[in-house]
Image 1 (tube, rainbow, N blue to C red):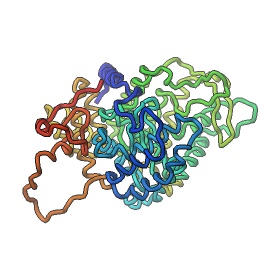
Image 2 (image 1 turned 135 degrees about the vertical axis):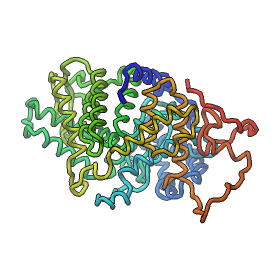
Image 3 (image 1 turned 90 degrees about the vertical axis):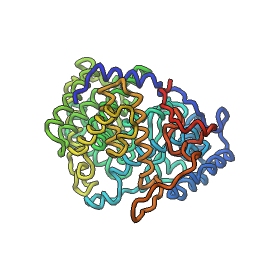
Image 4 (image 1 turned 120 degrees about the horizontal axis):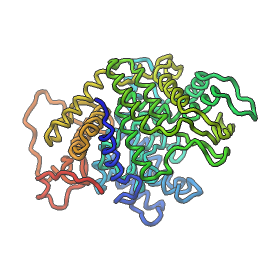
Length: 516
């Protein structure tokens, strides 16, 4: 499917209208005051039984023990507040009284699917990969303030804060009713959280990327030559770049389309978020994210090397990505000034180096291709595509989901069993890029599908009997319906959402409205 530039702009405008970086509607329970230990223990205890049992020992118990430390985890009170809301919110937002509970569970289904796609022990054993050091999928939270955007606390950071080895993925609360935007979270969960679960992986990639460009050691006090510069830049950006690569292998080229639209929207809302390679002085660190245009060229390098995708599909996606990259490209030359880290406590100061954009784009494609195809010792000599890749079957299912969403005529149930979460999100992205005017029904149908995904999730979901044969379903009382029907209200949707105060009105589903 060719991406139409006008349609992409309409999707960008949809994302802008969400205002994801602003405050949400549901602050933490201690707001506007500061949390204290007694309040935190109270809200954790009030929701502990709503989480799957596996998290009781692995997360909730160490979190309760670490509450005093968590309240002293930083000298900056605003950072303490962020740490507390992220770690404690990942528990209390599961409470039956939480208005975000239903959508949180939809989001957790996505997070779990991304994570397990790379780190499932059974899947790794089948292809002779090393087993991961972290077992449980991440928990998640909708952050009241969207000012940080989507982010993750990798398991090693959570361990520093509360001695639990469970990652936390955070999404601005204003995005909770817009699961189409959640495809970008593959960067966090199929990316960062996976990379940090294999302790030797990132150091190996750093060394490999430096070797890829060569150039030899950098002479102290001298500026790097072109090969040395590329080696420095791409090894410095490796955590972010590899996260994009892994997200694309999990969710397909639609990840890059979704990310491009989302980043365009954020830059309109906050122009200062645009990645700059020209710091005011050479002593300020460069952004750890490469500019958006280079991220798209990384994606091109990956797509060209999707070993199980049909050549004509690869070519179509490459042409789409090239068009998106031209849309984001600026001048023919980029000025680079700032510090890049070589290793712990060793930095190199880059001083106003003028680099042709074409050289950086070519390097980006080279790095994307390398990460997607290189055999790695961390994987016992396998490539990452031996465990996860976007293949012809994924492509077929995503297109089927997109067509179904466009043709369903308002039937939100039509697509829910057609694919896994990555395929659903990719299909929904393709559908809305084809018909932006159908954003609301596509978004709504996606939420319905993610409810079903949560029910069936192997870690988070419900326990079901295995009957000998099918019988008529057991009747349930009418007042039990609102929690299981994601269409019961425009905001508090999804599994486990609080019952509405007027049960008689819940039998007629209400179509969700776009959040302002």
